[in-house]
Image 1 (cartoon, rainbow, N blue to C red):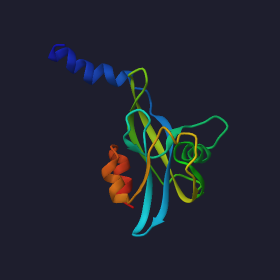
Image 2: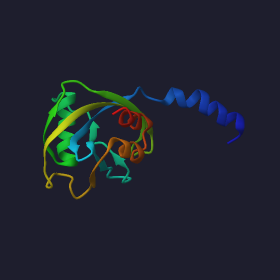
Image 3: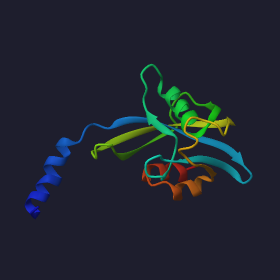
Length: 152
């Protein structure tokens, strides 16, 4: 690709092809550890990178209910005290199965975990780990999520 075509593609065509941001919900699962608050991170199924339990909005469920369901299915959080509205949000670019990259806006719901179990739907597909917010900021890739952890 020549430089002129590459520049035109980057500056004019790609922005036209980008969709408005999709919306996901995430569960920021917390507990009190021996040295202060701890955050529950899980590995993604596709790349194995560290993430929060999260997913798409679901028909018939509120955003909070969808976040609670993701926390159960992906991390085994059986019960938690939750706020009615998101505590924060961040944005990232998600690579879809067809290779297309779409912008995503994630609403983050704080969940103070009261019960977590080892047998849950995606237990064999993920690893989970409790870490300090500072450790979590080092483990995740998304700058917006890193910022949320650094402010805790």
